[in-house]
Length: 254
Image (cartoon, one colour):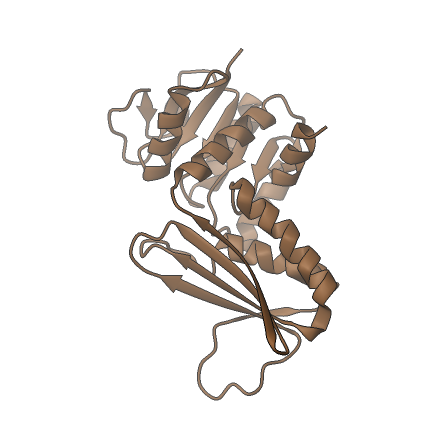
């Protein structure tokens, strides 16, 4: 039986990409959408979760961190999983997600791209091998409509690097003025915003007389839509808890 998906943020650009991919998917289908600004689509679209009439298996949430509790509460009450595909969560939001994870299957990742998740593993290995002999700087580039900075993916990559150092490093967001010499305890974070850049992330390891760069560039939003659908299929029927891309990949590679 196909995985039945409720798409939150259905009328946005990412929602459109998800619906486009699902139209030819043999294993999953969209049953309805939810959007604060509903419009006619290939499935019914509601303004709130309270209005939904269809039955689903998993929510894919490509909206924002606003009204997060409404979505989590619906998932809990209906016994469905939820893929959180947005970023910009506050500390309170993260605490709320952890609270609902005791009763609900939640898939949370800063980036749904397979390539970025491979990059995450690569930068951790590089940091372990190179150690403090190399300074780490992270540069991320996104379109001019992105609201949060640094990106969730950049923060995820910084966390992976930091794990190699026993979480002893501190992130520094950009530099300005007479800020003094760079400290070994820093992971530099730099956000670029412009045009229609989908998403680019670069982790630079700068040592004496040599530089190693690990980078990823998304050329289309479809890569994130495909990852969200993949996560929804994985999450169907899962017990309560927080899942990430590493769990999906581990299951697929058994």
